[in-house]
Length: 109
Ligand code: 2BA
Image 1: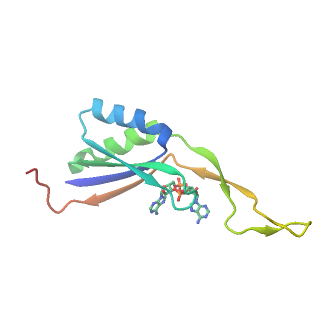
Image 2: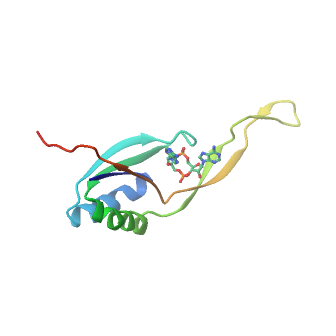
Image 3: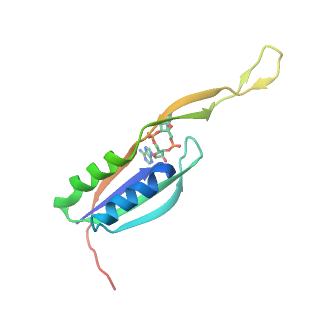
């Protein structure tokens, strides 16, 4: 068995979960926060047999879009007036960040 961990944009969560549950996959949704943007995103846990991993990944990829987001600068700059200013930086987010892990043991009690 494999555990798929997928970090997706909040706006894609509803569609991804609907597509996965329509195909009878079991999904757990966790509220998460990205370390770089410090903005909310969603982490999905999907436990599946090895043969189904690619199908789940294709479903997630087909549903999650790439987006441009504005992030505050990591370090503030000194402006011409002598005051510190932060400058926005555009970053490309998503569609999804996916990890696939081996599951050593799976039980339902
Ligand atoms: P965040 O950490 O908020 O990152 C949002 C986006 O900012 C990233 O999109 C990437 O385009 C950019 N970014 C992140 N760190 C950066 C850096 N040090 N310098 C420049 N740009 C940077 P994605 O790569 O699509 O990632 C979306 C979210 O997926 C991330 O949100 C984070 O929550 C998660 N993630 C991505 N890679 C990860 C990893 N290796 N381990 C754990 N979580 C990860």
